[in-house]
Image 1 (cartoon, one colour):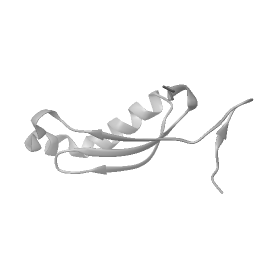
Image 2 (tube, helix red, strand yellow; image 1 turned 135 degrees about the vertical axis):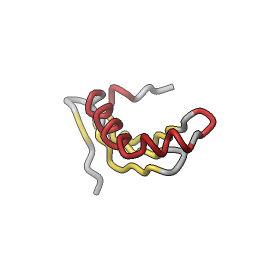
Image 3 (cartoon, one colour; image 1 turned 60 degrees about the vertical axis):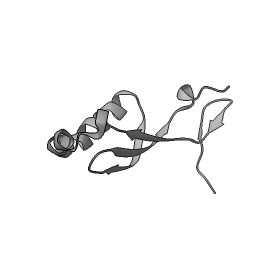
Amino acid sequence: MKEYQSLAHTRWDCKYHVVFIPKKRKKKIFGVLRRHLGAIFRELAKHKEVEVVEGHLMLDHVHIAALGGSRFYRPL
């Protein structure tokens, strides 16, 4: 069974899939920054109070799977 996060009157399971792609997919610049990006994205997630579950650094883009709180969810 899934483990849901909860507050007094709500329960949620919010998952986000974020893809970061630099402009024109400049592989040369991205290659130099690649070794620092993991720490940078984790620090940004910590600042936003989001847990990074999984991340993949590709040559020209980044995939991040994150768990966020209900305050980031915006119903239509």
